[in-house]
Image (tube, rainbow, N blue to C red; front, side, top):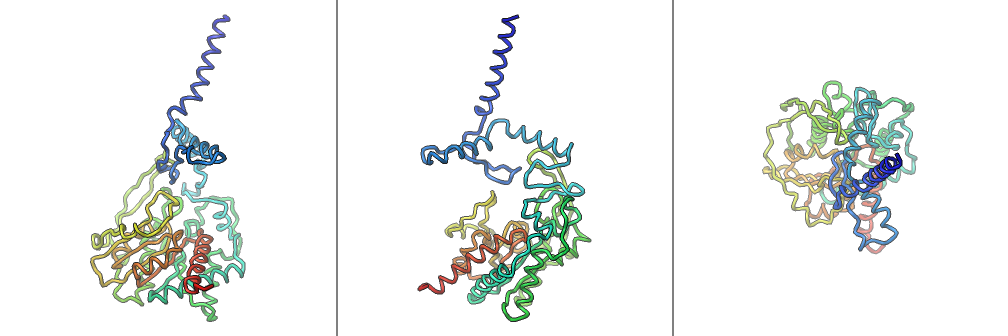
Length: 394
């Protein structure tokens, strides 16, 4: 009996040591791979020789958390259990709403939904001042400027947003910004060319699906992107009569079932669409022209160095400063402009370099409403740079 107890104890010790050692042995000692489920690059194995001693523990912990053996299996089990049993999301940045619609969520997005983050008059005035400096610079370079604010998924489909957050009976922050600009323009204090695309999208959502229900927790689908592209072209066409586009009603819109894995584990699907305009193949990729520029944005796995050239050189040239909402617009913008060059909002301080290099006819500065803080800070940063460029002795 004593030998049996010793054998069991020895076996338990082996199992314990195995549970400790196997995950380390089977870990990815390189790391740095793309996690599709988390939309980010996993931590790489620390380069101890080049690191300060105080930074080693945190770097090693990040590598363990991202690359430990069995991580994907544990994540898959957790994802399925939470979804199927509790109707909750295993992704910290995602909440499940009505009809299993998925919504991107952070505390600041919750405040945005509740209309609980309105701006002070000082903040609005500073934004208008910075924006005017940037718009004046664009105009002074001979280009037509346009500020474009896009609504979040929660704004277009509020009835499907997760329950539990009370919306205050006051304008949203985006409505507040737009109304302030309209009033300041009417009073002659500013001349900011601004579009707030909420009304057009709210009208069309009653007849078409324009945001991704499940496969994308934050963005519009290809139809929503086309509506944004069409509205943009409509706003610019009075200034550029040769700008052409195919109205959505004249396009071939083909639905199909699209599937993907939620959090890399659970198969989900939705109806997606293919839009055919008849102008496909009229442009070529010219992204290599951006390689020599000091663009540094690396906030997610996508390559944000995007530029195309259309075979019709008589069309206007576009420089589009924006965010991830532009991804699905790229093919359509490329069909309507002789050159389409993209600059991520995070790289907005390089606007002067881009203007000098590509000499656009049109500059669009776009941001989605939840990213107003980023857009505002980048507008200030760019305005400050422009001021010192124009006043080098200061």
